[in-house]
Image 1 (spheres, rainbow, N blue to C red):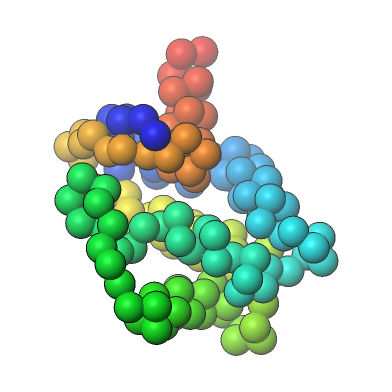
Image 2 (image 1 turned 90 degrees about the vertical axis):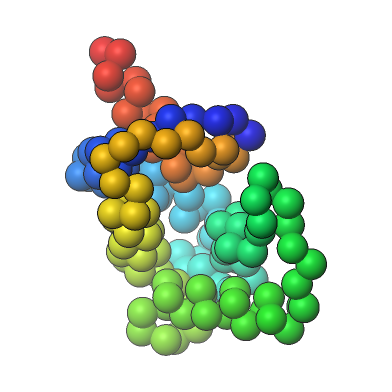
Amino acid sequence: MSVEVLDSTTILRFVEDEEAFNSLIKDRFAYLDTNHDGLLSYAEMLKELQSLRVLETHFGIDLKTDPDELANIYGSLFLQFDHDANGTVDMEEFKDEMKQMMLAMANGLGFLPIQMALEEDSFLMKAIELESAKAAA
């Protein structure tokens, strides 16, 4: 985990760079698609959903949550991705929802930079790395 400084502009530039965004989407999808069938099942997406850390308190301390409540939350998150409600998520559904999530995050951040603790292999961290590399070039 590392602490990074980001703002909405960093995220928006990343999402608008279709080549970079689509490349990371493809890589993440392939990583999650453990049976290589071109679709993500709930079981395949569960690790990614858990990485969103929707249930934590300040300073990254996890809350003790009822397993049934967790199952409902992760099920609801999965349905956000499964636009056609067929029980799986295809590449386009995954890309569309990830884009919407990133744009919502950018909208919520505003223009003032903030510090955020990020997992090394997280999608946001990859976005920051790509944007930093562009700025350095």
